[in-house]
Image (cartoon, rainbow, N blue to C red; front, side, top):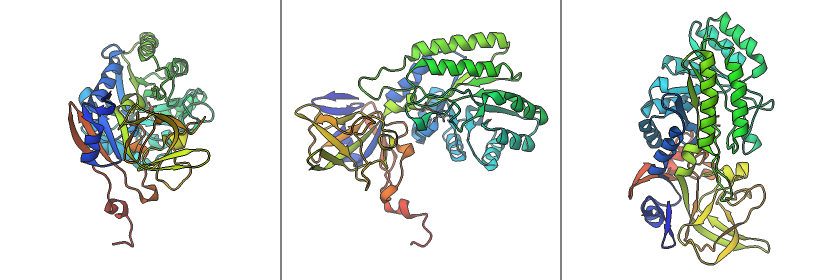
Length: 414
Ligand SMILES: Cc1ncc(COP(=O)(O)O)c(C=O)c1O
């Protein structure tokens, strides 16, 4: 992404060209950013130690999955359909790990029938699994009692979290494994998403490794995802080089004591995909009240829910005119709810922008993760198209939805 002559270019293509060709709104992904995010992350760890399982919930477009597959990524999947899509996008069953929660036995059966490793997050599911598949290998998700994340909804460890088997219940895990002759080949944890400091991650890692010592048949330990990216200009990026060195040190020490060549797994979503995607929109309306200037665009929380759902910050650029007179505006969407505010954060709703005009394009940055994948058809609004750009070329990787797409599941409707 670069700004030249006051306008935004994505892999050398002017935003205006993309909007003219594919319409507005539009999700655009930069292939070279995706490849470099993956390569940079891998380069922090010694060869052969780490397996990166991309958390495909962040963005499950198969064209992006295929790029990550080429780069050597594996997959973290959380539903049967994610597993199916990963398989159809070229991942081998053993490259996938299925970590459901409160899932049905049918989902587990699908995975087992397709040779996809299963990771279980409760004693009840371990019991059910053991009854159905005794004498097999399975891994377990442990709640290390520590959680972290950018919002309460995103903390997935600690006593308030529904995820995983609490770390004080390991004896019950081992008893069930014994009862059904299960080989517990992996220990997993994921403490939250949008984490900006190494401390909680390393603390959770120590806790998990202390638990892992009690499991004699391990082949891997999986520390989940959660690595934060700097959405705000003033935000300090998580120092991944430093964190990866520390994780490597903790893990290699553990491996030496454990006495077996274990693999370390991580499951990044946001770190790999967040900086890759941009949501492009068009200004459709400007209106004033005594308190605010509202700038309306042809998109809404149906396409990018993070600001409304978590008060999350996404940088907003006037992609048609990056410099000039600036003003404080409230950037809003076309959904019939007052909470449909792109510029909102927990602290304020206004943002300083190059004074937008009707017809100009606004870009929402770092929207590649949890953008389209959390989108909806609320207000009977279609999802936008998705485009991949690379070296001055663009390619449609998902068409925009139509009226027919939105109505095809209704029964009393022709
Ligand atoms: C089990 C699991 N692994 C990995 C992730 C990815 O998290 P992030 O996108 O913050 O890296 C999630 C996200 O919620 C998750 O639930």
